[in-house]
Image 1: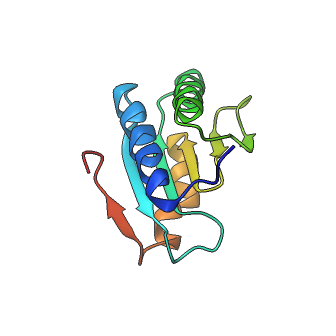
Image 2 (image 1 turned 90 degrees about the horizontal axis):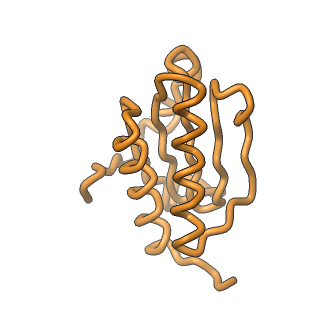
Length: 120
């Protein structure tokens, strides 16, 4: 596998957000953490309507990432579907149930980071 550059990370982040939108997730946010976080370049955060839907979104994002040459290094929360985390190292995707999204409020932790629009 070739080493990914930061410019190759942004398309995956935006495509993950588009997939979430196409599958009816709400409140989708892409946070650019390049130069801010030492561990990742982008967070994609979305709210699902059910555990089943969240798993479907996670599956489709994983397929798209593989097509783009990104390896998934970890997945957490898939069975319960309340907070699914997909770790592609340079892009981390969070798919929350509504109450979990509100409780953890990840956007607040990264309030100084740039937000991207899905159509960037």
